[in-house]
Length: 181
Length: 181
DNA sequence: TCAAATAGGTTTAGATTCGATACTATCGGT
DNA sequence: ACCGATAGTATCGAATCTAAACCTATTTGA
Image (cartoon, rainbow over all chains, first blue to last red; front, side, top):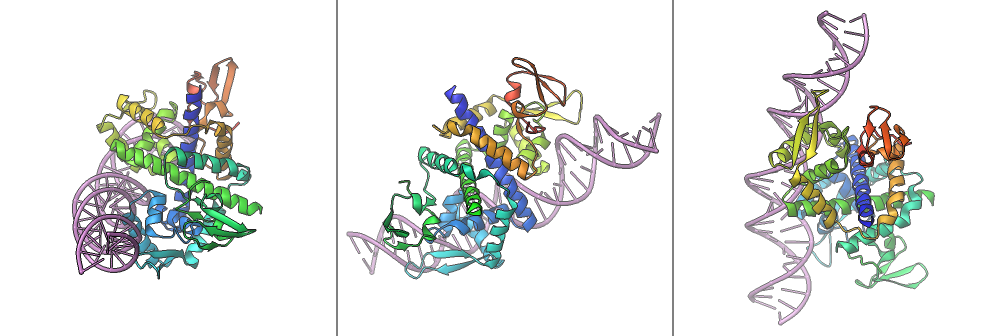
């Protein structure tokens, strides 16, 4: 019977994922955007400064960086995002949302109704990290749950990898280097 | 703080969905199939006899029926599925998995590791039906949780829409006419 | 009864995306 | 200075997606 339950969970997950994709697709159409473009904007609205690059988006969405690069060119032309070259490592370009992009992501949050679902947050979080571990996938979690995150004082944080100070805002964002603590 | 929690859930959902998509995409590549093709096969492995049509798949996956029709043509050529014309309504063609298709879906269940997640089943189910209601989306649930399902005796079921008898196997499958009880 | 409307499905055309490859530029180490 | 690795872009062919037109079967309704 254990196996049959696992199958059931897998199917619920499948359905949940399909449902979510439908909602985003519908929203994207209404906004005159492509599905991937909305996904990219959403990601940029929640990722931290170590994870706002073409390669990171590629890892997150599971598409080749060439494809993401093209989508980003379009989003940049349409003034949804801007690129900023890293001063320390000039190979890297940091992406960030322009007002138009921020507007889209907040409209998206409004359009997807999830009232009453906030009780599920801890379970979803666990499920997520369980799946990641079992399937040996890259991190993408918040610094708050990362084993590299150090907290020398209340509301003070330091990333163990970069040794940089992080604000309370920072540690709520998603990082590609995340490893569960 | 309520709003911030809803946003958090939305982001977990987003991430869960992206993760799931990556797993399927990876699996599809290994199998030499396209992402959509795997999704279609998976759906056909869990839908009931009222929901095994082009239009139903289109509603489930949120893509146009033209697009689904094309994917089905490929899957039929490659002997993953077969089509059978409905005798009562000859506009309708019922789709079902051939051995090759069944093999793919069972390999998929094996490849996606979800150990320990079965505790989450009831919550996921609730979340799902909550999202569907809030966003006024079509059903796609099992007959067991459908308000049209009647049970005149133990392990005996009748669909209130079609008035047909349903077996215990039947009522565990997903139906497009589903409405929560 | 029979024409009109509707519904399931396919086809077509044009645009978009995807993945693979090749290429440039930069960084880090030796 | 060289070499390998990394970040990102450019390009090409194949595949997909959407929208709309189209076909056929069924249902509606006067």
